[in-house]
Length: 154
Image (cartoon, rainbow, N blue to C red):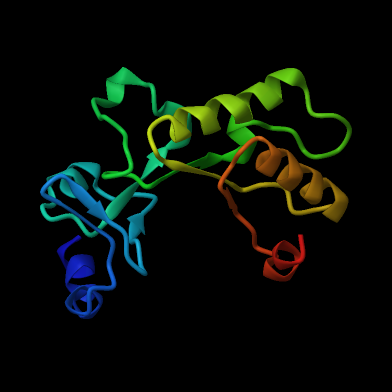
């Protein structure tokens, strides 16, 4: 992680990075959020912090993670759509699947965190659009898309 933090120095010097210091979150042009295998404990220890963590959207209420999730640590929380919701966009979404979207988005929003579902179905297009619509109507903040042209015209 030190290599990554060093690489941000030019952005840091120009004041482009969102920071959390002395109890204050200061938004800026670039908010760096580590995903995947980012070391949570190292991110927690940063002070001031200008590198944040992508929280596990489906586990924000899990006490076993021993973490208080909020926007000062994780401005965004994400999860694998297929695992969390599972609807392929064909036919009707079930009440349980819709409730999952609402619950996970609500858990994030109650903490001031934005939500993102990744690995949404991409094909057929009408099914992808149905999934995107359900996510947005359910309050999700971000669409994760490989088809940038399709997302821009959605």
